[in-house]
Image 1 (cartoon, helix red, strand yellow):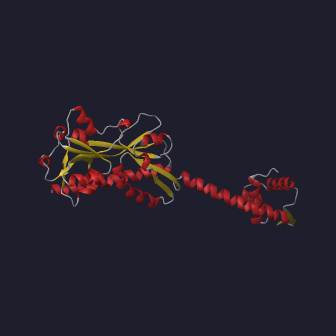
Image 2 (tube, helix red, strand yellow; image 1 turned 120 degrees about the vertical axis):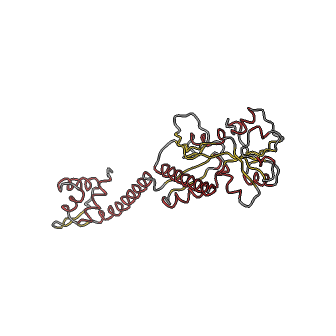
Length: 310
Protein backbone atom coordinates (compact mmCIF):
# COMPACT_ATOMS: atom_id res chain seq x y z
CA UNK A 1 0.00 0.00 0.00
CA UNK A 2 1.56 3.27 -1.16
CA UNK A 3 0.36 5.96 1.25
CA UNK A 4 2.34 9.19 1.64
CA UNK A 5 2.41 11.84 4.36
CA UNK A 6 0.47 14.28 2.19
CA UNK A 7 -2.45 11.83 2.15
CA UNK A 8 -2.74 12.05 5.96
CA UNK A 9 -2.62 15.85 5.82
CA UNK A 10 -5.21 15.79 3.02
CA UNK A 11 -7.81 13.80 4.96
CA UNK A 12 -7.18 15.74 8.18
CA UNK A 13 -7.60 19.09 6.40
CA UNK A 14 -10.74 18.09 4.44
CA UNK A 15 -12.33 16.88 7.67
CA UNK A 16 -11.51 20.13 9.48
CA UNK A 17 -12.56 22.44 6.61
CA UNK A 18 -15.64 20.50 5.49
CA UNK A 19 -15.39 21.24 1.74
CA UNK A 20 -12.85 20.65 -1.01
CA UNK A 21 -12.73 24.38 -1.79
CA UNK A 22 -11.76 25.39 1.74
CA UNK A 23 -9.37 22.45 2.09
CA UNK A 24 -7.66 23.35 -1.19
CA UNK A 25 -7.16 26.93 0.03
CA UNK A 26 -5.74 25.72 3.34
CA UNK A 27 -3.29 23.37 1.61
CA UNK A 28 -2.43 25.92 -1.10
CA UNK A 29 -3.60 23.56 -3.83
CA UNK A 30 -6.02 23.93 -6.68
CA UNK A 31 -9.33 22.16 -6.14
CA UNK A 32 -8.53 19.94 -9.10
CA UNK A 33 -5.20 18.87 -7.61
CA UNK A 34 -6.83 18.16 -4.25
CA UNK A 35 -9.59 16.08 -5.86
CA UNK A 36 -6.96 14.14 -7.75
CA UNK A 37 -5.04 13.36 -4.55
CA UNK A 38 -8.21 12.22 -2.80
CA UNK A 39 -9.12 9.89 -5.68
CA UNK A 40 -5.55 8.61 -5.67
CA UNK A 41 -5.83 7.77 -1.95
CA UNK A 42 -9.24 6.11 -2.29
CA UNK A 43 -7.92 4.05 -5.19
CA UNK A 44 -4.91 2.96 -3.13
CA UNK A 45 -7.10 2.03 -0.16
CA UNK A 46 -9.81 0.45 -2.24
CA UNK A 47 -12.53 2.15 -0.19
CA UNK A 48 -14.35 5.46 -0.21
CA UNK A 49 -12.89 7.87 2.38
CA UNK A 50 -15.57 10.58 2.11
CA UNK A 51 -19.23 10.47 1.17
CA UNK A 52 -20.28 13.44 -0.98
CA UNK A 53 -23.46 15.22 0.02
CA UNK A 54 -23.64 18.27 -2.18
CA UNK A 55 -20.62 20.43 -1.47
CA UNK A 56 -20.12 18.87 1.95
CA UNK A 57 -18.00 15.79 2.59
CA UNK A 58 -18.63 13.28 5.35
CA UNK A 59 -16.23 10.59 6.48
CA UNK A 60 -17.04 7.01 5.72
CA UNK A 61 -16.48 4.39 8.41
CA UNK A 62 -13.11 3.46 6.91
CA UNK A 63 -12.37 7.14 6.34
CA UNK A 64 -12.84 7.79 10.05
CA UNK A 65 -10.42 4.97 10.83
CA UNK A 66 -7.89 6.55 8.48
CA UNK A 67 -8.40 9.95 10.14
CA UNK A 68 -7.64 8.56 13.62
CA UNK A 69 -4.30 7.29 12.37
CA UNK A 70 -3.68 10.56 10.53
CA UNK A 71 -4.15 12.56 13.75
CA UNK A 72 -1.61 10.42 15.63
CA UNK A 73 0.93 10.46 12.82
CA UNK A 74 0.65 14.23 12.22
CA UNK A 75 0.86 14.95 15.96
CA UNK A 76 3.99 12.81 16.24
CA UNK A 77 5.58 14.52 13.23
CA UNK A 78 4.78 17.95 14.71
CA UNK A 79 6.32 16.91 18.01
CA UNK A 80 9.40 15.58 16.23
CA UNK A 81 9.80 18.81 14.24
CA UNK A 82 9.51 20.87 17.44
CA UNK A 83 12.11 18.68 19.18
CA UNK A 84 14.53 18.98 16.27
CA UNK A 85 14.03 22.74 16.02
CA UNK A 86 14.54 23.13 19.79
CA UNK A 87 17.75 21.11 19.53
CA UNK A 88 18.97 23.18 16.58
CA UNK A 89 18.15 26.39 18.46
CA UNK A 90 19.95 25.26 21.62
CA UNK A 91 16.75 24.86 23.66
CA UNK A 92 17.11 21.12 24.34
CA UNK A 93 19.90 18.58 24.31
CA UNK A 94 22.82 17.40 26.42
CA UNK A 95 26.24 18.89 27.18
CA UNK A 96 29.15 16.81 28.43
CA UNK A 97 31.74 19.04 30.09
CA UNK A 98 35.03 18.48 31.90
CA UNK A 99 37.94 20.55 33.16
CA UNK A 100 41.65 19.90 33.32
CA UNK A 101 41.76 20.49 37.07
CA UNK A 102 39.91 18.74 39.90
CA UNK A 103 40.09 21.83 42.11
CA UNK A 104 38.33 24.00 39.54
CA UNK A 105 34.92 22.43 39.84
CA UNK A 106 33.80 24.61 42.75
CA UNK A 107 32.85 27.47 40.42
CA UNK A 108 31.02 25.37 37.83
CA UNK A 109 27.70 25.22 39.76
CA UNK A 110 27.34 29.01 39.51
CA UNK A 111 27.79 28.93 35.76
CA UNK A 112 25.46 25.95 35.36
CA UNK A 113 22.81 27.70 37.46
CA UNK A 114 22.95 30.77 35.21
CA UNK A 115 22.85 28.61 32.09
CA UNK A 116 19.92 26.48 33.34
CA UNK A 117 17.93 29.60 34.23
CA UNK A 118 17.89 30.48 30.53
CA UNK A 119 17.98 27.01 28.95
CA UNK A 120 16.35 24.69 31.52
CA UNK A 121 15.89 21.76 29.14
CA UNK A 122 19.61 21.31 28.43
CA UNK A 123 20.98 18.40 30.48
CA UNK A 124 24.53 19.21 31.63
CA UNK A 125 26.75 16.29 32.63
CA UNK A 126 30.15 16.89 34.26
CA UNK A 127 32.44 14.07 33.11
CA UNK A 128 34.87 13.87 36.03
CA UNK A 129 36.62 10.83 34.52
CA UNK A 130 37.86 13.08 31.71
CA UNK A 131 39.62 15.53 34.03
CA UNK A 132 43.10 14.11 33.48
CA UNK A 133 42.78 13.80 29.68
CA UNK A 134 39.94 16.05 28.50
CA UNK A 135 41.25 16.52 24.96
CA UNK A 136 41.38 12.78 24.36
CA UNK A 137 37.77 12.45 25.52
CA UNK A 138 36.85 15.38 23.26
CA UNK A 139 38.40 13.70 20.21
CA UNK A 140 36.54 10.47 20.98
CA UNK A 141 33.24 12.35 21.07
CA UNK A 142 32.73 11.75 24.79
CA UNK A 143 32.96 15.47 25.63
CA UNK A 144 31.33 18.53 24.09
CA UNK A 145 33.64 20.98 25.83
CA UNK A 146 36.88 20.71 27.78
CA UNK A 147 38.19 23.64 29.80
CA UNK A 148 41.95 23.26 29.52
CA UNK A 149 45.34 24.88 30.10
CA UNK A 150 47.29 22.85 27.57
CA UNK A 151 46.53 22.65 23.87
CA UNK A 152 46.93 19.69 21.57
CA UNK A 153 47.87 20.48 17.99
CA UNK A 154 44.90 19.09 16.12
CA UNK A 155 42.93 20.89 13.40
CA UNK A 156 39.68 19.29 14.59
CA UNK A 157 39.85 21.10 17.95
CA UNK A 158 38.94 24.77 18.33
CA UNK A 159 40.32 26.74 21.28
CA UNK A 160 38.86 29.92 22.68
CA UNK A 161 40.51 31.77 25.54
CA UNK A 162 38.11 32.35 28.42
CA UNK A 163 40.23 33.61 31.32
CA UNK A 164 43.68 33.96 32.86
CA UNK A 165 44.77 33.12 36.38
CA UNK A 166 47.81 33.79 38.54
CA UNK A 167 49.81 31.17 40.37
CA UNK A 168 50.48 32.01 44.00
CA UNK A 169 52.53 30.50 46.77
CA UNK A 170 50.42 29.74 49.85
CA UNK A 171 51.98 29.32 53.28
CA UNK A 172 51.26 29.72 56.97
CA UNK A 173 51.59 33.33 58.12
CA UNK A 174 54.48 32.34 60.42
CA UNK A 175 56.50 30.70 57.65
CA UNK A 176 59.95 32.31 57.09
CA UNK A 177 59.16 32.93 53.41
CA UNK A 178 56.13 35.01 54.38
CA UNK A 179 58.51 37.95 54.86
CA UNK A 180 59.10 38.04 51.09
CA UNK A 181 56.72 39.74 48.63
CA UNK A 182 57.79 37.62 45.65
CA UNK A 183 58.82 33.99 45.85
CA UNK A 184 61.52 32.88 43.41
CA UNK A 185 61.90 29.30 42.22
CA UNK A 186 65.19 29.12 44.14
CA UNK A 187 63.25 29.74 47.37
CA UNK A 188 61.79 26.23 47.13
CA UNK A 189 65.21 24.81 47.98
CA UNK A 190 65.00 22.65 51.15
CA UNK A 191 61.28 23.39 51.58
CA UNK A 192 58.48 20.98 52.36
CA UNK A 193 56.57 21.42 49.10
CA UNK A 194 52.99 20.19 48.71
CA UNK A 195 51.78 20.05 45.11
CA UNK A 196 48.83 18.58 43.26
CA UNK A 197 49.04 15.15 41.68
CA UNK A 198 49.43 15.00 37.93
CA UNK A 199 49.77 12.37 35.22
CA UNK A 200 53.38 12.39 33.85
CA UNK A 201 52.30 10.31 30.85
CA UNK A 202 50.14 13.22 29.67
CA UNK A 203 53.30 15.30 29.07
CA UNK A 204 51.84 18.22 30.98
CA UNK A 205 54.36 18.91 33.73
CA UNK A 206 53.08 21.85 35.84
CA UNK A 207 55.10 25.00 35.17
CA UNK A 208 56.48 25.33 38.72
CA UNK A 209 57.70 21.73 38.75
CA UNK A 210 59.24 22.14 35.32
CA UNK A 211 61.16 25.20 36.54
CA UNK A 212 62.25 23.45 39.73
CA UNK A 213 63.69 20.65 37.59
CA UNK A 214 65.26 23.05 35.08
CA UNK A 215 66.93 25.12 37.80
CA UNK A 216 67.97 22.00 39.74
CA UNK A 217 66.24 23.21 42.88
CA UNK A 218 65.80 20.44 45.44
CA UNK A 219 62.92 20.72 47.93
CA UNK A 220 63.44 18.82 51.19
CA UNK A 221 60.38 16.75 50.36
CA UNK A 222 57.82 16.92 47.57
CA UNK A 223 54.38 15.74 48.69
CA UNK A 224 51.75 15.04 46.04
CA UNK A 225 48.19 15.50 47.30
CA UNK A 226 45.13 14.89 45.18
CA UNK A 227 42.61 17.12 46.98
CA UNK A 228 42.75 20.88 47.49
CA UNK A 229 41.12 20.71 50.92
CA UNK A 230 43.78 18.32 52.21
CA UNK A 231 46.58 20.46 50.80
CA UNK A 232 45.21 23.60 52.44
CA UNK A 233 44.85 21.89 55.82
CA UNK A 234 48.43 20.64 55.63
CA UNK A 235 49.69 24.14 54.81
CA UNK A 236 47.55 25.64 57.56
CA UNK A 237 49.11 23.18 60.01
CA UNK A 238 52.57 24.42 59.02
CA UNK A 239 53.54 21.19 57.28
CA UNK A 240 54.71 22.86 54.09
CA UNK A 241 53.95 25.36 51.35
CA UNK A 242 52.01 24.96 48.12
CA UNK A 243 51.37 26.64 44.79
CA UNK A 244 47.84 27.23 43.50
CA UNK A 245 45.95 29.55 41.20
CA UNK A 246 44.48 32.65 42.84
CA UNK A 247 40.86 31.79 42.03
CA UNK A 248 41.22 28.24 43.30
CA UNK A 249 42.71 29.14 46.67
CA UNK A 250 40.58 32.22 47.38
CA UNK A 251 37.58 30.36 48.96
CA UNK A 252 39.97 28.60 51.40
CA UNK A 253 41.74 31.64 52.85
CA UNK A 254 39.01 32.95 55.12
CA UNK A 255 39.22 31.70 58.68
CA UNK A 256 42.74 30.29 58.29
CA UNK A 257 46.10 31.76 59.23
CA UNK A 258 47.38 31.63 55.64
CA UNK A 259 49.06 34.18 53.39
CA UNK A 260 49.63 34.25 49.64
CA UNK A 261 52.79 35.46 47.97
CA UNK A 262 53.39 36.21 44.31
CA UNK A 263 55.59 34.31 41.91
CA UNK A 264 57.56 36.24 39.29
CA UNK A 265 55.03 37.67 36.82
CA UNK A 266 56.71 36.00 33.86
CA UNK A 267 55.81 32.53 35.16
CA UNK A 268 52.75 33.19 37.29
CA UNK A 269 50.12 33.89 34.64
CA UNK A 270 48.30 31.04 32.89
CA UNK A 271 45.62 31.07 30.17
CA UNK A 272 42.63 28.73 30.14
CA UNK A 273 40.75 27.76 26.99
CA UNK A 274 37.42 26.24 26.05
CA UNK A 275 38.20 23.37 23.68
CA UNK A 276 35.42 22.21 21.35
CA UNK A 277 35.01 20.33 18.10
CA UNK A 278 31.63 21.72 17.06
CA UNK A 279 29.69 24.92 17.58
CA UNK A 280 26.11 23.88 18.30
CA UNK A 281 23.82 26.56 19.78
CA UNK A 282 23.93 24.80 23.17
CA UNK A 283 27.75 24.88 23.20
CA UNK A 284 27.87 28.49 21.99
CA UNK A 285 25.41 29.51 24.73
CA UNK A 286 27.43 27.75 27.44
CA UNK A 287 30.60 29.40 26.19
CA UNK A 288 28.87 32.79 26.45
CA UNK A 289 27.96 32.01 30.08
CA UNK A 290 31.59 31.10 30.80
CA UNK A 291 32.85 34.39 29.38
CA UNK A 292 30.22 36.39 31.26
CA UNK A 293 31.08 34.69 34.55
CA UNK A 294 34.80 35.39 34.28
CA UNK A 295 34.31 38.92 32.96
CA UNK A 296 32.21 39.71 36.04
CA UNK A 297 34.81 38.08 38.31
CA UNK A 298 37.54 40.18 36.75
CA UNK A 299 35.56 43.36 37.37
CA UNK A 300 34.97 42.38 41.02
CA UNK A 301 38.68 41.71 41.51
CA UNK A 302 39.56 45.11 40.06
CA UNK A 303 37.06 46.80 42.40
CA UNK A 304 38.48 44.91 45.39
CA UNK A 305 42.02 45.94 44.44
CA UNK A 306 40.99 49.59 44.14
CA UNK A 307 39.35 49.42 47.56
CA UNK A 308 42.54 47.98 49.10
CA UNK A 309 44.68 50.65 47.47
CA UNK A 310 42.32 53.37 48.62
